[in-house]
Length: 147
Image (cartoon, rainbow, N blue to C red; front, top):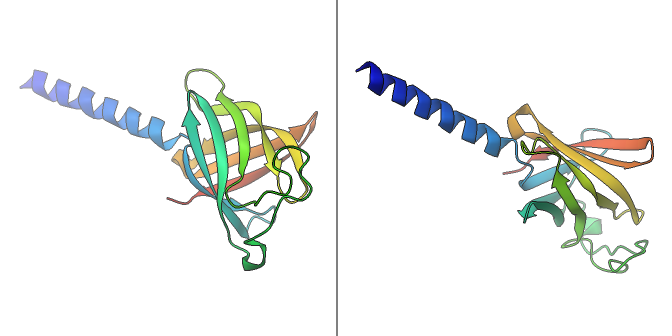
């Protein structure tokens, strides 16, 4: 009887650990929040392929910007529609636990600038901190899980 309880407890512990690891992943659909901390701007889907994250804008909430193009972009995204645009590229896990991701870039389509980026989840995977930086200057937004 004791052996069955021990196996059940171990199974529950492992399942809880796996659920936590999944919850902490940045993969999924995120609602971007403006720097004011209140205004939802867009939905970005983050995917992982071969250990590399990318993020694509799926929706813009401002009806007047639905058809906006990245007219200030300086790379192949110039004059392309912002909806459907990949704005996070080349981000990789910092270590095996995948608690923090960095090494790639993020694009701000409103000004066409790209920044080095670092992202990490908090609140059991309910929020995503997205930091864009150049040198020692940085800005961090907190995105909310949308699915």
